[in-house]
Length: 117
Image 1 (spheres, rainbow, N blue to C red):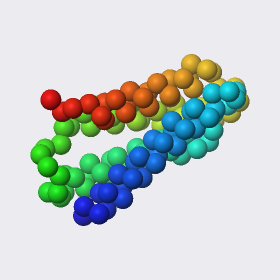
Image 2: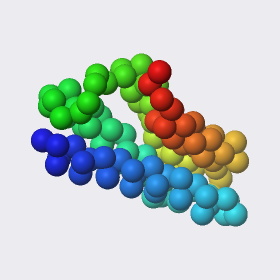
Image 3: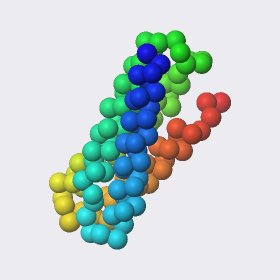
């Protein structure tokens, strides 16, 4: 079970790396890379599976912080929706939508890295 959890952790990190990298790479272009949506969807699904595996197993130290998980889930859902809308709009994406994706990814990273105290 712990091995499977670690596999989904790697997928989760790769998904967010795709989102942040795709956002940064598309700063000088009018559109948004399609990989941003796919990365957001991957990170979202992997995160949900990680929480399920952590709840089923007893391999993690301490209890899960459900408040933090809920905040991250909400932000991830918003990012996925914005990335989907941006992908559908193509080169006519509003700069505010594109920058919202980048900012929310950074907020999600800060929430993930913050201490549980």
